[in-house]
Length: 543
Image 1 (spheres, rainbow, N blue to C red):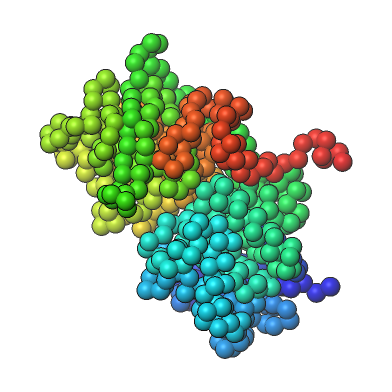
Image 2: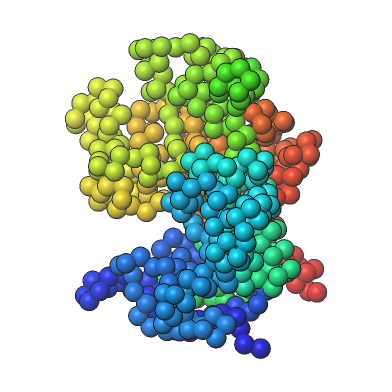
């Protein structure tokens, strides 16, 4: 039987002439009807370029230099614009990676789904609107009728991603090309969306090309895996076979780095000196009855309610939960970025809730924050040296001292000296996050609040940054408040965990206690949503 999609010798270059850079170097693969194929690899491997080339949606600087792309017998590489428009949406759905730039900001999200239904399936305006609400509910958006009437900026990143998935699947296409469709989603929502994807594939024979850097997702969901490195396919085969016994060194490195595939607390690297807090010392951070409400009266929404926890000096305390659970709001109140409405935050035995003016400014030396998106939190006009030096200069460090400290910090976060003159746009995601960490450590803080610090990074880079955080904590006696929706990451770095939902802490305890003996149904659901181990055990292999 002929495959639904056949790709032969696909080559894509960025730039022209002497400046041409090969991004995809002659890849071959097939996808059968109803099959889920995962294309995995790190940023820059070429996997997203492959997805965009199949849709003929490459940026202007990219050019298909050779090969064939056949969809159900139609050569997409040479198809007319009109033919492509008839295929896109109706027979080929596409889920782009970035929901912030992929939805029309001037249209309500329900109308954006309805538009596809009217254009490709001929539904009336009323029928398309009703079906759009059903689709929004199917992809896991609560209160679908109300959400359909909202604009993209009124939705969280995870909700916007689900709307994009709804648009791609609205017309029940033969093939869906999904470029990192769940990278912005929480574990339970991710499972819901991937369940929906598999249900579509089974019910309608929809084939799926799943582009992802998450090997745990690929292991759980794909029939076959295609591993891409430097624009080439280095390994492919059944998911179980590739991940149970990877043949290529690059695949082995990816499998070893994937937090969803392996458990265990990371330990300081060999040779890193470890500082430990004296036994019996009171907690560095103690939070009691913390609360925050947005809005007033009947329209007020309680973002955080009666949150309480304490963090011993030199340890890592994790707040875990879905988007909207209140974990980031809690972290910002602890760091005094936003004001709390109720409760107290005691830092090193002192209530800091009411600090103002110079006292609050001095607190910044002792509590620093690393944000989720380093590209958005770093001034694009400044060099790496300037970014790291800025907090030092703000607190009066002289030029000689600043220069020496910047170089020392750069070495501590494992970046080469030549990085000092670069700007954020010239760095990879992992390099930018290391700069953000160095900047946060410049004032020698005691508490570092880490708000989803690795969620946007590839698995191998993610592992490197987490190991760096563990080493820095051991070396400097740092205390971390770690915010994440990824329990695979939480498992690698945390000492204690608190599970949040709807602004409240449902349960908290030592890491192993939460993972092995959860007491709340929601915690069990979160743990059950972690993609399973990819590698079968010995009994399975024998079978």
